Amino acid sequence: MELSSFYSAFNLLVKTAKRTVNSINENPSDIVKFCNTLREAKNADRRVHIIGMGRSGKVGMLIGEILKNIGIKISYLGKSLAKPVRKNDVVLGITGSGWTKFTINTLQEAISRGAKILVFTGDNHSLAARLADSIILIPRGYIKEKFTPVSHAPLTPVSHAPLTPLGTVFEMTTMLVAIGVASGLRDESSVKGFNEGVNEVLRSAEMTLNNIKSNEKPLLQFINTLESYSNQPRKKLFVYGSGLDSIIASISSIRLNHLRINVKSNYDWRFRKAGDLLIGISGSGASTSTLERVESAKSADMNIIGLTSFPESELAEYCDICLKIEGRSEEVSADLRQISDLTFLIPAFEYAAAITLDSCVAQLALDLGITETEMRDEHANIE
Image (cartoon, rainbow, N blue to C red; front, side, top):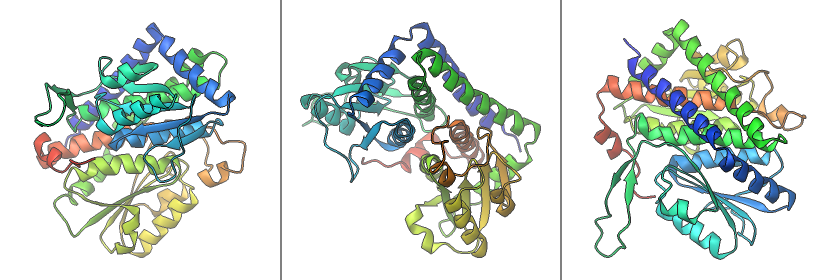
């Protein structure tokens, strides 16, 4: 079995990320504007509201949780605990096409309430870009169509993305750049802090890829196991992590669901049975809730795959297959981090885990013979 599609997707994601960072550094004013706007909101005790749909929304949640750790008040618009948008608050939108209806409507409403608008988008001519006070342009793998075919609706450009591998370029690159922005907020020089953050993340991704190249067996076992769950509606897959890792689990679940794998949410955990599969994600390998989930899976005679930076950790001991993902430097769980002075960390593990899992999707699609059209048929069509 070859891993050609995995390596192709992984290299594409990293190379695109590097090109984006280089482009930003050629004219770093956008990063400075983003950091200054967020810094001003923090200093003025204003709230930062985040809006995005689908996987863009999940990346937005990752951004929000990182910003919380440096003292910024965060609200997720469209969620049950969303806070009111007030004058001089900041609304951060994430939309690859720049035309996502709910995101656009939210930005327009926020403007009417006097909010400042920041946007990550892949189209600097889009409506989202025109609404924003400042944008950061992120490459995307989108196919643009001319107009919506709905006769009673205004004529507006429509964009959609291939699901693998180009469809993930925007989300993964946005994740990296946003981590850099958060790092920039912690340094007097926003640009210096930005580059320190993204370089640390990219180093971990490249080290992860080198580890895989030096020992492909765990990844091959991982992919073979997942293949056996495609087109098997009676066999369930659960993907679990805590803290930031829970967001990576959610992002990856969306993609794996496109491969006709019966991916279940954590609300369905009570329906687990022998032979089902759990993927546990924990950078430290010591997360209390993740270990509890893995122990429960073990007692139910489920198959277990782990992703961690520590292959000798307690998590790894429970796993049938363990992938070493670089990025975490200490075996400190999210639980202990909350009561220590280690509240901020560069989420290099999360980025490396996300692009590793997305690259696996590209390989699985090839091996299973699932086409782009067939994957799109499994994608949510009302959101």
